[in-house]
Structures are given as structure tokens and as C-alpha cells.
Image (cartoon, rainbow, N blue to C red; front, side, top):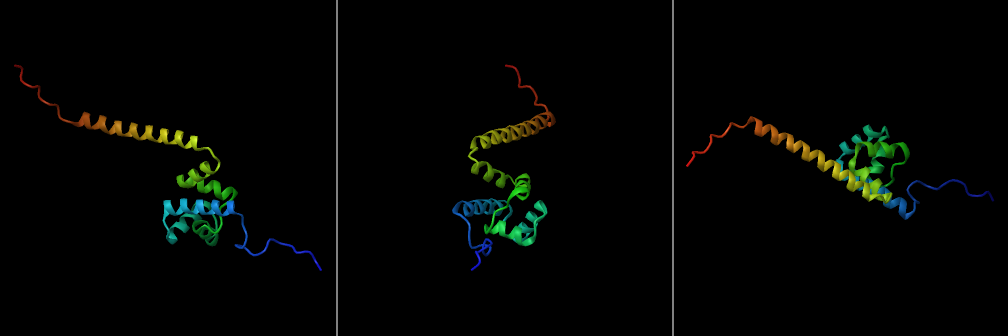
Length: 128
């Protein structure tokens, strides 16, 4: 008898960690893009993957690897966050949130400065 070769049928194996990884990426993608076919098209455009491959990522059947994972992280903040959390580097997320908050605050200050500059001057109150 010949020894068994090959990995078996797709979708029948996988460790618990692989399934959690795929589910985490799928949750991030669906949270950011939704559940529609348009989400799959967006993932295809971001990564150059095929329709079936992108559908497998969005549904959590499989998770992206290598260059596809990097492309997703480049375009999706949610996927990037999943990767950082999976790597146990949550402190980087705090730093990124602080930078984002600072940028938003600077933009708000610019708007306030513009509103103050455009506002009519108030007459001085009468002296008593």
C-alpha cells in the first residue's frame, strides 16, 4: 500500500488558532466594509485576490497570508488593529490613538481659529 500524501480537502482541517485568526480578520473586514458583495470587491481591489479568496476572508473560512495580509493592513485600520493585538503589542495601539487624537485636536483648533478670525468684532461694553 502507498503512503497517504497531500493535505486533504480544503476547509476540513485547521487548528483552533487558525480558525480564531480567520474569524478575527473576517470580523474586522465586515465591521469596516459590511457584509455585501461590494465588501468583497473592495477586498479584491485592495489585494488583487480572486473573488473566492476574498469571499473566504470576509466569511472567515480562511485568513489572508503574506502579501495579502499586508495589503489589507495597509488599507484597513480594523485589520491592522487585529494584527497588532494578535502580536501582543497593544501599547502600539495606544500610541496610535494618541497621535490620531492630537491630529483631530489640531484640526479642531484650526476650525476654531478660523471662526474667531471670521467673527464680527463685538462692541466694547459701556464704561460705568
